[in-house]
Every structure is written in C-alpha cells, then in structure tokens.
Image (cartoon, rainbow, N blue to C red):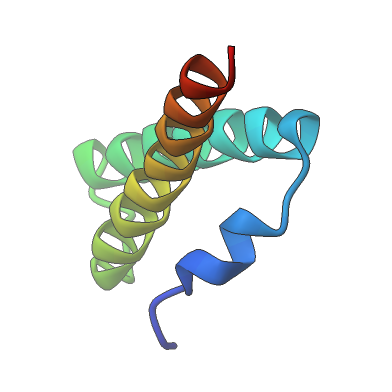
Length: 71
C-alpha cells in the first residue's frame, strides 16, 4: 500500500477536509487501542495514518493562511 498523495487532500472541500481529519484521528485512536491490546496485525498502518493526518492538517493550514492573506 502506497502512501497517500497530498493532491488528493487538496481536492477536498472544507467540509470534506474537516470530516476526513476527524475520521483519520479516530482511525489512529483505534490503531493505538489495538496496539495496546496486542491485536494490531499491521503496524505499518501507523505510518500511513500519521502521514495522511499530517497532509490533511497541512492543507487545512494552507487554506487558513490563504484566507488571511485574501482579507
């Protein structure tokens, strides 16, 4: 499984971006829970999920900065 691309995150609307961030945070929580209970079978998903969260938060911040400059 390849790491997700930032272009995919940039195509999302504001609402979709917020929903996706929340979904990824929930997924990361579930992965931590599985790791704590020793049920985690795919530890590489941590890297992919954290990477995706960082991309989404970066896109969100880019949009905030663009909105501030546009005012």
